Length: 135
Image (cartoon, rainbow, N blue to C red; front, top):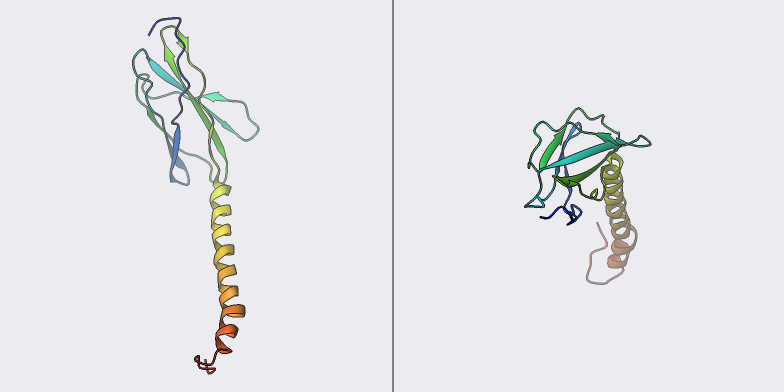
């Protein structure tokens, strides 16, 4: 890779929640010419802070530990070459409230299905002649 060639943006940045206080951040290597990566983290309303990676190099997985449960965390990564840094990746977020929203949405959907069965389907079936009216 020549010094004038720009690094592409890291596109496959993924976040895996290991548990409530620990997550893994993983990205795809940009390959030849990369000498390392920089990771930054932010919490809601705070400036970006650099992460001290345990080993500078070509590792494409980093674990963030001792997170505060209930606190959203935002991450971004960029590759480094001897010519300088590449563009920051898109931001990935660990939002503990998103899981609650998905769980609530699932409860609401199943609640609506249950209400439909209880208040619409069963009375409709009771009115049909082939269904017993003693439940």
